[in-house]
Amino acid sequence: DWNAEHIIEELISDVQAQVGDGRVLLGISGGVDSSTLALLLARAVGEKLTAVFIDHGLLRLGEREQVEAALRPLGVNLITVDAREEFLGALAGVSDPEQKRKIIGREFIRAFEREARQHGPFDFLAQGTLYPDVIESAGGEGAANIKSHHNVGGLPDDLAFKLVEPFRTLFKDEVREIARLLGLPEHIRMRHPFPGPGLAIRVLGDITPEKLDILKRVDDIFISGLREFGLYDGCSQALAILTPIQSVGVMGDERTYSYTAALRAVTTDDFMTAEWARLPYDFLATMSNRIVNQVHEINRVVYDITGKPPATIEWE
Ligand code: XMP
Image 1 (cartoon, helix red, strand yellow):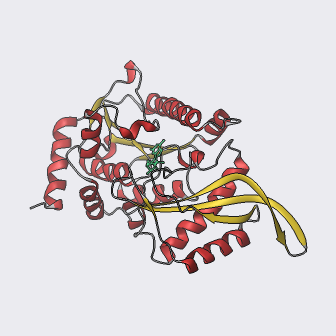
Image 2 (cartoon, rainbow, N blue to C red):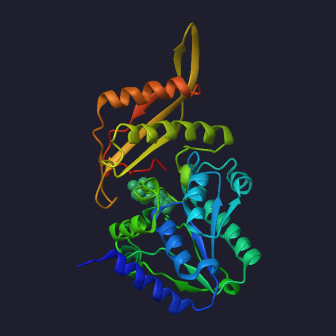
């Protein structure tokens, strides 16, 4: 019988035994795994933990502040790094999806290494690896590698830390239960997955600060709306996409020529196949009205009614 409180005590003493007086570095993505790990490690080693959250400018509205507000009061020694200019500079003019992922992966490692050197030396690198990740990487190049899902790649030799991976035997639901007991707020605990490259793969084509700003506002209306109408937990993942399509519209007496936003929500067990979520028409109508009223750069909203396969969940 699985007892979360008991597991937490066990994980903490295992970490203490492994780490001793060593210093631990942890990268925070804003998701449930790394956030929960931060809380666990803060309990286990306190100030010996340094958690680093890199803001690459491709996050959702208010996400950095949410992570700070969730972790700092619970004793996590958290450093947030504003790397927005570096990332957006490196991405300027790039429209190929795999190229975007490569650049983001590279910039991510660069920024992480810099922080590791600046705040180090560290003895350990902690990672929120779960049991299914262990299985998947043991299986080699799986179907998950159709897109290069690299968030953190290899680090150079002088930063070759020993790994601390307390969640290696756990499933996602178990981490969520541990998160609840450790006090992680519900909006992070129950959050949909969010890709490492973030909004970069949801601004189709080349990325500009203006397009990112438009998408952040659309996304915020959609995600907040799902929560407000009690539909969020029924979807496995929901996202907004800024398409490069401009089309003719009318606003008052004026003709407009503005962007089309796409909304996508799916249900799935494993993210390998997915169905589009049958969201109520009235809800979609409300979302569409809010988006075109509040985001003037958008004059048309479409809902993606394609399953996976053949479509992927992301549009890039
Ligand atoms: P697709 O679009 O392939 O996505 O159906 C399946 C799941 O993987 C996520 N995804 C990514 N996650 N880096 C990530 O960390 C990536 O490059 C990436 N691409 C897709 C996607 O959000 C969905 O949950």
